[in-house]
Length: 165
Image (tube, rainbow, N blue to C red; front, side, top):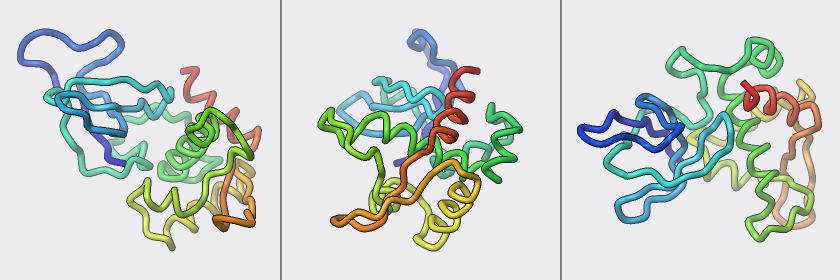
């Protein structure tokens, strides 16, 4: 997953609810359009590829440019922007289920998180330990697929507080 920023159009406008400078997570490139997700709301939509530019930021680093909308209380709970970004990612994946419309234990395997982020395994486990210690996620040992994590009710409420802003 990559982070992109919406560029101001040279002509025409942007879709409703999309502003120049907005950051989105790039999910898929399909011809002249890209499927992106708003990290704050979880909303997915296609945007014209020529209106997006890649930025050198981890999709987990919500406060990388210093103008984050992450509430201070949530940052204090989670410890840092990467931890908050990871929590948002886990909640979004839990809400989506396994992609087949069926929610099982709503846990995301560590191997999936490694593929979806720019974190090395050591850094990922460090961030996961931090949000687990804060009571925002819980570890799930699976018989197949190894260790996975799912958000707790407290973690979901924390992400909802971001989305409600």
